[in-house]
Image (cartoon, rainbow, N blue to C red; front, side, top):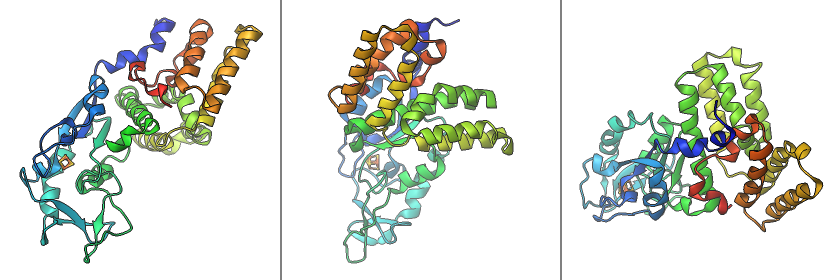
Length: 331
Ligand code: SF4
């Protein structure tokens, strides 16, 4: 049986096996952009390389447009745009572009996340311009054509853009989603059963609660009284869909504070009054924004190691991804 310290460290151990994440090739420094340059991302090429095994892909190169190449843009209806050359809008290359990534798209079911280059008519995840016949962009923005195909084919896959990874909250949330997706595939999809779903739900209780108490309870009902309406594969799919949606946005400071108090509840019988007050003061400082989440959790973790049950120590909230990434130092 695992001892308590092993339970807490489980996420750190898990990462060394590598988590497969797709990425726009130019973000890894490949010189595949239209001008023969790249858009190397320091963060992707730095800390994330230690934990993610990247699979890079450039859909414009795959479509045979060459390097260097004329620039491309989206035109027409923002919900169903066409791809053309910026300087030759009579030449519609949409079908050629789609044909270039099809085979690759079908082989991405093993991924746990995808990082896309921003603003690209191919890879941009959102806010990509779609031009009108008068060459002005529509007010409504779109996703790049490859990004949209990726979202349609793998609707539960955590996606993020390189630019948004500069935001500490979005970065923390993306990495958490990738690790949760990986855990779900490893623990549930390799042997789908209600028992494994319940075990996953139990481990992720406080992560869900930090995002939505309502959906934590809703997913509990899905696995309880409602699960007989579905086949096991339908149930896994529905659970993953709702789970990923529930955690898709960063949790608020107030919700984290509530979770800290819930976890503190496990310690109350074991602690002296003064120690309890110190912990509560630290939580309060976190709520007020004077200290970061890592500070509050380090203190809590210390006492949970000493007094927490296996159940509480196995909570992914305490260790959703490797501590060395330092993500909770910035939120
Ligand atoms: S943004 Fe996408 S299509 Fe453009 S160079 Fe990078 S990988 Fe290729």
